Length: 503
Image 1 (cartoon, helix red, strand yellow):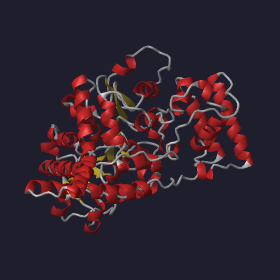
Image 2 (cartoon, rainbow, N blue to C red):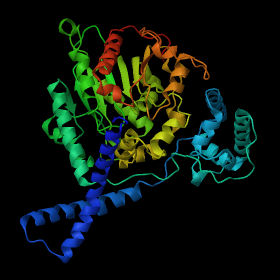
Image 3 (tube, rainbow, N blue to C red):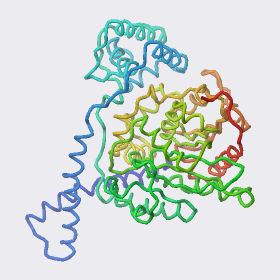
Image 4 (cartoon, helix red, strand yellow):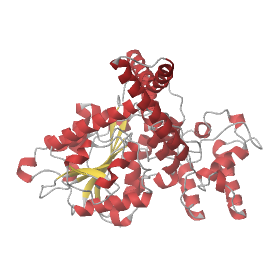
């Protein structure tokens, strides 16, 4: 993640302008060439490229943008008791009620948020209803009124009657906000993917590719897939595997976040073994790093549904004979981690866990959804996030049509007595890390005591590691950050005993 200095701001704005200018310049040059056909070889080559870019925009981006706007298939709503239990947990963990409501309504003024506005938002947030199926039964309408009454109690004021001018943030109902990327950008992604693959292979990782018949379903097409005969036991997922040769320690399952594949994590994964003092005598800690293409800046199929993702990762783990392992994740990977924890048959295999920049704790707060999908960018880091991640075609679709907060939210008690380390950055531009940190450490919301940020890592129970100057994902860019997290992973790998009480 880029910083926030003026030179970085100028750099990122020029970079975005340069990428976005490719397509309109291509269209202009094609139009110009119709009136003035090129004669020189150079102009003919430029025209050929301009035609390709223009065709890519018209024949690929437009049709996919239209098809990806299809309504989300919301999961079945929780039963009444489960809804009320979830609502109670959320209300008990809201630091600033007025800010909470206003941000869910895109920064609207309090007097513009009427009771009917809140009811519309609650139909989506509590009952998992989109506009097409927003109608509730009589008993549910009565329950809905109770939730809105609860909002008034939380705010300590009455909501204005009727409907105001405010518009709520309803992630899986709102438009999928995506921006076009030129073919040149995807060629860059393909190049970075190839270099990352070479780096991982050099460091002892083996690629298990998707079946070759699915090669064309991921664009840019992956050159590295043509150089391996190893096929993933989970056809929709590819992954990198470093053999587990340790006789006394646990292997590691890693699930990445929204990024250019494993590019941001390759050095961290390689250093887990590279800096391992026990490795020569005991063997190496094995690693499986799953690749999730819809959040890797590719043009591909939509992300797998919750249960299918769990089933496919289960197939991968079983194929390598793993019965217990350390589970590590970054950012969006904590969503998949939450789903794995919620599956009893898989949860019993999960040992200690490492959550780096997790988005699932305190997910009922609007920060993650608002900051990633609705916040107008201002600083250099926000512009980088907005253009290169938030508005990527498949990333935007993943969040707008497959991100259901009620099934993604994670509470402290959900970790099931495991040893867990949560890594947070003090300058995270996506997650409200202060709220998450206070929740995890049990500090009062209004407390000004920051000692919770400096607690010593113990390796037992729930530990918090605070990086005060790190933005989202920046810990992987810093040697000391990778070293510290690598130490945690290696320490957890030594835990061979079972966790009591796991399903």
